[in-house]
Image (spheres, one colour):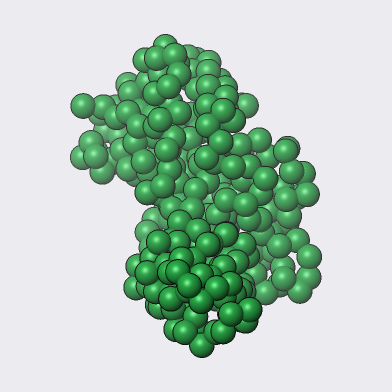
Length: 310
């Protein structure tokens, strides 16, 4: 069988197309290869989707070994799947103790109450540092996972501050939880004098979802994780990988008879709304996707179509 993360994301893509087409598709088979092709059938048509990751796992063998080992540990627990964990950019599952055991406990606690088709977040403890540089101004320089929220932090401080959130690769998805975190930074800032610094606890949130069914009879945990050094905003790198994947997917699909053919690109971003895979696809030679009815990115538990049938 192909990597379990590809099997699970193929099931997500098939479910998305079934809902869009109004037909019940069942994932029946997989044709293994460099780019595996998953075949699903309805009462009226056959769907074939080639699945590929937008990274090269061999770029970080240690992180890849830790990912596979963590899947085995999670599978051995009391919580059964199928579950898919999304690791944010620049992060990796822990491979050393005691962090590995702590991650297993937190993942299983987050997954235990989930219903089929549900989503949740695994909260991992991290620390954030806040320092006051000047009394003048109203500005916060932010590094790390909160950097995209620097304007909201700036609105909450008086003076010039530095926020170090490098340990936080992904803030919680819920706006109310993020707002509470930003309000906490504002509250802490009012108690600091120039030259003071404070460190406080926070939670990094990794998305986890429970699939509706067991794809091709598989159950257990899958972990979608890119090498931590991969930057999904690196346009040159991403275009090169997308081009390579589409070319290989077309070759794999050429040998398959199906009414609808597509490609699913498994990508890692902080949030699905922030992916820009479509811009990379559309910047390439149209011949790479002209014969495909579906091109979609699967990001953080969501299917994000680039092209779809009318």
